[in-house]
Image 1 (tube, rainbow, N blue to C red):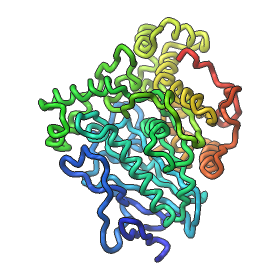
Image 2 (tube, rainbow, N blue to C red):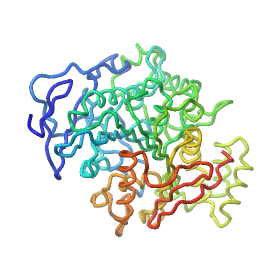
Image 3 (tube, one colour):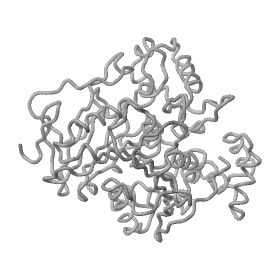
Image 4 (spheres, one colour):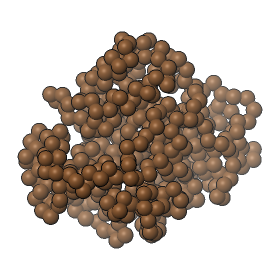
Length: 479
């Protein structure tokens, strides 16, 4: 077949060659979702006859339009929102020309388990294919159909979709020049929390051989008790019984409309805090946190940004207006001994204002502490901290959640990421840092070594900044 026409288990697909690499869009990895099937485990795609056009992007998972970031334009992160169509469980593939047995990287997007897709301009895989990696991005079920813990339906259906996509990669990626025996699964934010969960999921064993957790949480899953609170609230709001039959009768439009109304639920229980701080009512649901489970024996790279919490404060103006009462209230939401937590953070940051303290506690609670626990539980992980500060939002955004993504995908020239209200801010972001970060991800996928020592007993962390150095991790023992 021609270089841009590839035979898959479902049928032949024809892609294109923009930017000097091969690109294949909208290839189904599971059957279309209709009716009660929206709450079922993924089923194989029945296939197609002839050659399927893989040159245009496809539909996305049902999802509400995301906003809430005020002065910051986060549309490149969330993508186009809900692009309707039943056949949205698809993969996009970027591959070098005439590749054979190249490393494979499979990316799981973020979006709080309620939004996002592989159509985001942030997830263009051209740079990976340019550097002889086969890059795969995927869509999965979101919100109620993906993660609501409905009696009678399989749990974590969005997670099951990721497993189905990995099975598709195992069975098909060699046809695109990839090595199915060298697959790196990586994700960011909610996608990283899914990667962490898959490290502790026996059904995923053997489907990937390395993993990268970018701003995820190894202790970030809902307990079944917390998930039941969300399920009951959703059923009550819809006026139905909390059963798979009842939810299956509700159209997607109504399910999507309900999602924002469920935000802000108090999911604290006698045993557990809300790992997502009320920012989203959906999450992977597990009996045990990944960091407390037996983890897959794969190479692991884990990290976060230096100012994760700024994304949730700076664009809204609350980074500057935070008070001591705000910080104290947050500490009580995330820790059993809030006074001790506050004392530890004030001791570590004696010059910090209230906004900086609030951001640090928020970011550590949602991402950094749980990621670090995952690295420690794994025992052989490499750890990083991305510390370059974006000048967006009048210089207040800094090294916030998601700022590392353009560097990982080497997309600093993307127009929608540049400007005073865009993710990278005004001015010229450091191309040398993008080369280093993207190169580290490629190196890790190729050899298992990103270019710095493992975390180990010395707790070494690679600081990714304009001057990158290996440092000793700050103390997170209070978590």
